[in-house]
Length: 206
Image (cartoon, rainbow, N blue to C red; front, side, top):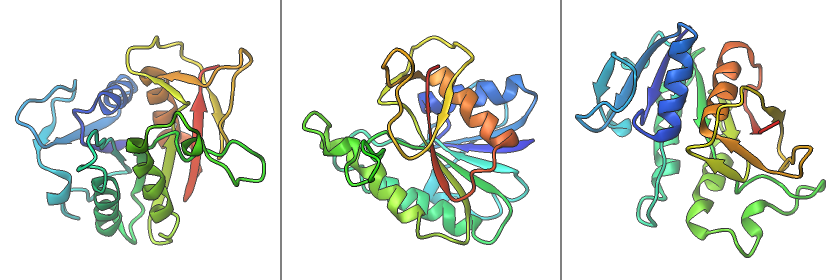
């Protein structure tokens, strides 16, 4: 498999790159900084918004690891994924987004979401809007992968996870938790053998 990872210096993206390299994927990393924090030797300094169709041509999949952490940056979630969709439009290259948990539903009727809760930070709502935009695209083979509610950057790699769908899912211990490392396993599994085209899926630690 040949994949590109954009916003590659993000912590989740770094884990995805490591997992892919460990499986002998051919990986190219794109980041906006001079410093390459990833394990990928094929690193190109380039901002997402400067990427072209030529840059992403020939890849089986593109992983979007973009994350925004200030109010001012939140609209970039939609802008960056829209740009990636535009340059991948009509191709067979899959686009996989490192998503958020805020848009997961908490009832079977799908009328209430995690982000509606009183303790959910407004800062994290932007990826729900990003997902809404993706759902309108019929010209791109996108997949939006939401982590569990407790997404742990330094959590252990257990090697196991539960693949779920649109609803917030708890494991047998009543937890909604997953490490970046286990999330990366799920992401690379989806690239390798998944078929969730134009769908949002979610993952939680087993």
